[in-house]
Length: 147
Image (cartoon, rainbow, N blue to C red; front, side):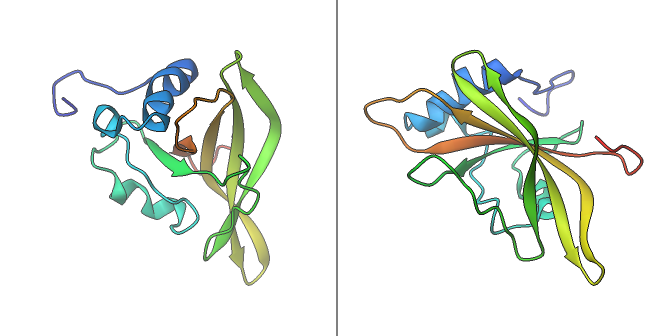
């Protein structure tokens, strides 16, 4: 379907959580196969687009990432940098929270803020049988845009 003329995958925050993330947490992987599972701590943000099964025409990529048992992923360090939370945690109705993160690259002159932005959706609901995942939305902002 991604190759069809006029098709564009652009779910809103509520749809991302209430449909895609919920299905993934309940183990219905076949219904969310368009969105891969990626460990964001083992790859750099600029490598993620090449790992996607479908090309993004709008520069936005979605993926699932496992969260640890207590629901927090406090260590967001990769080989060459780290993800830093910016702003306040946003509430998406009563179903999830959303954190916005920016990738900083370690360099010879210290830490350099990049133009890679990630929205991390954490569900606030629990099911008796579920897997612990967050859904991430990755975007590379234009060089001249500070957010």
